[in-house]
Image (cartoon, rainbow, N blue to C red; front, side, top):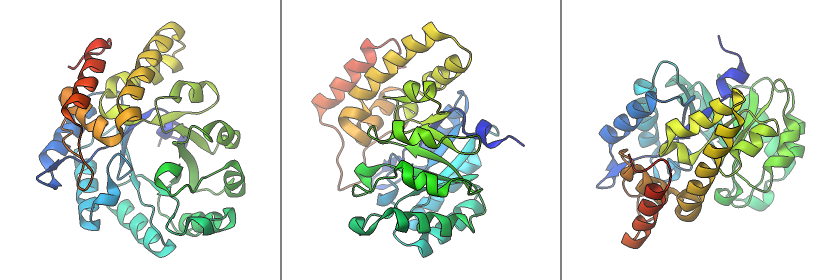
Length: 299
């Protein structure tokens, strides 16, 4: 069996959820997974921010997870987002996700009562879930979608050594450098954005969960491979292109931008689920121009 470092060293696509007439487009999701299976991606992060998991019913979440687990390539790792507002519900979600085939789970911190989420409360939350989780856990730091609740180094140090708390996906440009101090032989740090993915690798991180991997899975995976193989010139050139595209796609337009770019690249993107809206015609053209003028193109 692979060690934990090997299971996290690479690029995960944080899968988007395609909709057709407000319902999950299962055929579109299957097509996306099967197309990504042919790339060097390490695996798939299901039911995260890009997956609009807060807009899915509980039954819909399990439908998405089942579909990805069933269709993923045999070499692909699946992790599932399971954070909830209560420890009780989180435990239920973790057990269910593991039972459906998720090999790892990810926890976004509770945030409804954000001011009450002290480091002590967060530590208890993580420990109580991790103590009984049947699979390894990643922490997910994304203050922008968690009411400002932020995972900082102090919390990681408090959790150091817990056998099931194995990594953090850090999607905050303000904390990832500090949180790298928690990296060890048993705890790993992954980038949550292509904007600083290469910088994180150079500083001791092992992988990334990159929204841009929904649009350019092969290219994102190649960046990690080239870096590991010591191909410095190729790595820097590829990174420059990915950073620029990340700024023009997800950086400027969020999930709606990622989905629009996926459509242009032959994936099934579609519109975000209401009440959120897709891009205006002129915004789609901005993304089309960004893709066409890059070295990757639209196909």
